Image (cartoon, rainbow, N blue to C red; front, side, top):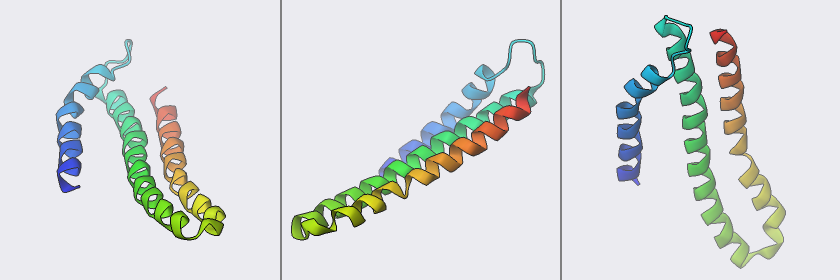
Length: 102
């Protein structure tokens, strides 16, 4: 598990300079707009990775619980929906940051 986290972090570190270079708006000469776009992308990306990781752990545990107690389906479903709020928060932050560019 630690090896996968290290790979994702290395990918983020290596891809950050490229995203700053490609995030420039054609008529804008400031680096600030590119950095704001990078921050918006990281807000969505990191929150999606965190939600996927949480859902994987909750889902695997939920399947084990459902094998023993099928009547706990509703409770497990609620537990699986809770990490989705992380992505919604990341999207809201990215939306507000995107408004700073223009």
